[in-house]
Each structure stands twice: as C-alpha cells, then as structure tokens.
Amino acid sequence: MKSLARTPALALTGFAVVALLPQFGLADYWQRQIILVAIYTLICSGLNLSFGYAGELALGQVAVFASGAYVSAILYNHGHTDILLAFGAAVAVAAVAGLVSGLPGLRLSKWSLALVSFFFVLLIPGLVTIFESETGGSMGLSGIMSPTLFGQELDATGLYLTAIAATLVWMLVFRNLIVSRFGRFLRVLAAGPTLARSLGGSVYQLRIQAYVIGALPAGLAGVLYTYLTGFVSPEAFTLEVLIAVLAATVVGGANSVWGAPVGAAILVLGPLQAHSFELYSTAIYGVFLLVVGAVFSGGLAGIARRVTRRLRATGPPAPPGDQPALTIPGERLVVSGVRKRFAGLTALSGVDMTIEPGTVTAVIGPNGAGKTTLLNIVSGLLPADEGHVELAGRPLTGLPAHQVSRLGVGRTFQTPIVPDHMPVLEVVECGRLRHRGIGFPQAVLRLPGFYRIRREDRAAALAALSFAGLEHLASDDASALPLGTRRLLEVVRSVAGRPNVLLLDEPAAGLDDDGLRELGQLIRATRDAGGTVVLVEHNVPFVMDVADHVFVMELGTVIAGGPPEVVRTDQRVIDTYLGRRGQHSDEVSLP
Ligand SMILES: Nc1ncnc2c1ncn2[C@@H]1O[C@H](COP(=O)(O)OP(=O)(O)OP(=O)(O)O)[C@@H](O)[C@H]1O
Image (cartoon, rainbow, N blue to C red; front, side, top):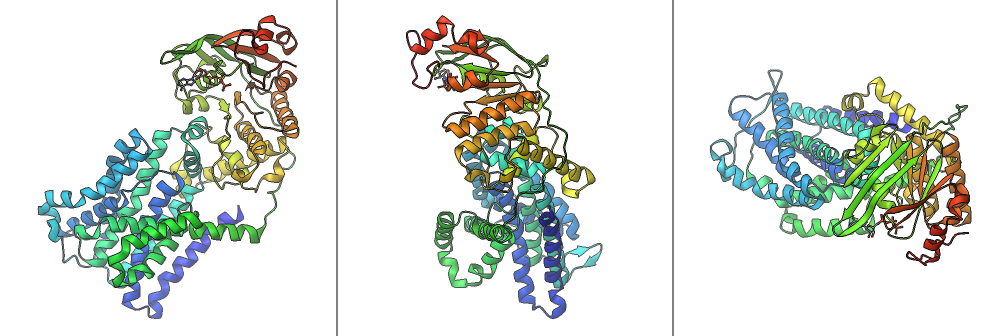
C-alpha cells in the first residue's frame, strides 16, 4: 500500500524537475526532444494498456496518433487555436477511431483485432487523399504556428510545459486505472477470457474498454506532434513509426505503467538521434523486439521490478487481525432436464440434480460421461439445449458466464489459470471482482469509494488466505507456485468472492498425498463455513472421503446418487467402474 502511495509522489517530483529544466537554461533543441519523449510516452502507454495489460495486440495506435494530429491541424486552419480544444477534439476522435477500428476486430478474434487495426495504419495515405481539401493530401498541412491556451499564445516553453502536464495527467489516470479493479480485470483477461468471464467480466466489453482507453493518449500525442513540428503529412504515420513504437513499448516493459516513458526516452534519445539510422530502422527495431522478447520479456521495467522485489524482500502483509470466522453464503443449486449435444454426440441427455446448501456434492463418472460439460453449462460457459439451472430460485439458464458469476457461481478449472507475475494476494483479490462494477470515476479520481473497495478486497483476500493456511504465500508470484498450490489458490480465490455455489473441476488431479490432504481440509472448511461445493473428480477414494453426496454419471445421464456409503454399494456403479458396462479408467476404481 505504501509503495502505491509513493508512486504518484515520485512521478510528480520527476515531472516537476523536468518541467523546471527550462528555468535552468535547457536549450530549445532539448526541449523539443523532451516533448518528443512525451509524445512517444503517450503512444506507448496506450499500447501498454491494451497490449501489455489486456493482451490485445492493437496496432492502430499510429492511426489514432494521425487522427489527433490532423484534427488539431484542421482546427487550427479553421481558426481554432486553443490547445485544450484540440486535446478535447482529439480525444473524442481517438475514442471514435478506437471504436471503429476495434469493434469489428474484437468481435471476430484476437488476431483479427491486430489485422484490422494494422489495416487502419495502411489506410492513412488513402484517407488523407480522399479528404484532400482538409488534409492537404500527400503535401500535408504546413504553417501551423503556436497554439493558444486560454487566449494566450504558447511559446516554445509554454508548449513544453503543456506537453509535460498533459503527459503527467494521463500517466496518473493510467496508473490509477491499472491499480483499480478495471486494471486487475485487464490482467485477468490477458490470462484468459474464460477466467475473466468466470470472475464476472464481460470479455467483449473489457476488450473494447481497453482498446478505446488505450487509444486516447495517442490522440493527445497527435495534437502535441502537430504543434511541435508545425507540419502534418502522411509520411509521419508510417509502418516504421508503428514498429518503432512497438519496440519502445516492449523495451520499456509493456506490462508496466512506467515502462512507457523509459521506452520512449530510449527511442528518442537513442535511435531517433542518429539520422543515418533511418535507412535500417525497421530491421534494427525488429532485431530489438526479438532480442528483448527472448532475453527479458518484461522489458526494463520487468528487470527493475525483479530487482526492487529482491531488495525489498517483503514478508507477507500483516494478517487481518481478529476477524470474525469466514462465512460463505451457500445456496441450493437445482439442475433439471439439462440436455446438450455436440454435433452428432449427446454429451448430456436429461440431467437432474439438486445440490443442497452447506454440502459437498461430488459428480463422478468415467471419461466422457459429461461432467465438465455439466459444470460449463451451470457456470454459463456453454448454453444448454434444453433444461433449467437455478441457484437459490434464480434462473441461470441462458445467461452469459459473467452474469452467472455475478449471481454467485464461483468455479475452478482443470488446469489452474492465474495471471502471470501477479502476487498471490492479488490473485485472491481477483475473486472479489464479481461483486461490483468497475467504477471509472472512482478509480481515476481516487474518490473515497476506491479506497473502501481496496480495503475490503484486501481484507477478504487475507481472510481467505488464512482460512486456507496460505497467508505466508501472500507476496509470492502466483504463476511460479507448484501445481498443487495453484489448485488450492484457485479455490481460495473463489472463496474470497463468497460464492453461493463453488464448482471445482478435477481439483485433485496431479496432487500428491500432502496436496490431497490440504485440498480435502480446504473443501471441508468451505462447506463448514456454509458453502455449497460441487466437486467433479476422478479420484474416487478422495471423493468418498470428502463428499456428503455423490452423483454418478455415465454417457450423459445420472445413473446413481446418494451418500458415499450407498453409492459405493450400488451395483450399476460397481459395473461402471469395473468396466463391465462403461469405459474403464485406471484412476477410478472404487475403494
Ligand atoms: N466442445 C465440445 N465439442 C464437441 N464435443 C465435446 C465438447 N465438449 C465435450 N464434448 C464431448 O462430450 C462428451 C462429454 O465430455 P465431458 O468433457 O463433459 O466429459 P467428462 O465427464 O468431463 O470427461 P473427463 O472426465 O474426461 O473430463 C465427450 O464425449 C466429449 O468428447
């Protein structure tokens, strides 16, 4: 928490020092270079948000940069010289350009966003020619002199200060967003859209938000560029610029807020200084990208993060103190008449189950019995062809996964999904994402609600970690933990969100005896805290040990259900598991 509070103070101090440099005789040339750093910082930071954090390869930044530059030049030529007006118009146009280039790409697939947005960069010369009367065509628009601010003409130093201020404001907005629930959702999205959905995020909405918000600073950069150079032409917005910006983003650290100014400074003060470099720029940036990608994928910011982590060597955060025992509001889950076909194959043919609150209910059956399909239908990841699912009397049928999650369904996955390089405590806090909206104004302006939600998330995550006896891992990198611990962590993440029902998809797979014992304890503790647990599992001895009720499935139907001691002696179940009727699996012999 302290380090988070320190970050804006450090940033403000850094920017204040840069802003004061002209007072100490900073030459005009260097003022222009620093404005260029600010311009590339803005463009790179937008890429950091959409590409580095959300994992969406949005290549349209240069097109948005161009739109900001042309908007301000056209406004200037129509007599509107106020730079704030130009910023406002550029941000509006950037949002529209982001939407127009992002919507079709995001609707299709991840790669189509990259292609569609890349296509927009190729379109620039064509668009400029079509609107030649306003844009000046290939000749460009020249003679754009000093802008004004509140009626006062800005000289070179005025433009310098404006560029520093605009970049600082955006960087603080960016940083506030990244440490908010929205930022956490972006990192969850990068780990996998399925995880984002199951934590209550609408993937499509998140992708659009990331892409559009990431486009905004490129619009601001366009305005600064126009007033810095006094000239706008299509030659300034080429693929080489796109590759340079990508290289700077990756070198600085795409997955970092402060990597953007570092990458931008390296670009401007390094390669762009050497005029002979231009000829080979694309090849050199390409090599740069490959080397950085292969050697230090987190960029310079990643290296700095690792070093500071090692230097600080923080212990786990303070325990939550004397807290009331954790309670989980388990509810009744009813599945009735659920059918599902995949092409010619019937995965579920009329499944009925009632799962009582405060119990552990296991669903077992041979491979292909339909267990995971059932979990996917309950959690909204798959639609049912027929039938109903209700939680506490509320229908879940037909709702998308993120809404099902918000209504109280938590789940884990056969292969645990945790975002890269995220501390365990933050991973667990992600379980709380389903509870409230993102609250942009609260996050950006740091209103009291933001801090309240932060405190609540942290307290709930610490309580869930100590509930599972994992509080000592709070500061560890979650993605580096062993498989068994990541499985436990997924359960803890769900528990932190206090779900009304918790679906566990083969949590015991690959666990050794210690792991199984810890998992069993955690599942029982979740039930004892009031939780409703549904456990899909192949490890029958484990199931018989922890479950209160067992359903046995075979070929898409429930063939038996009851307490473990009853199911164990059911002749049909014995036949299934001994292989006389169904497929035999080595893992599933009855004890
Ligand atoms: N997306 C899909 N497309 C086509 N067929 C599918 C799909 N998902 C599942 N199936 C098929 O539906 C049947 C039920 O699969 P499901 O994964 O639900 O079984 P399971 O009991 O969970 O098996 P396992 O224990 O091996 O995970 C299988 O025959 C499977 O091949």
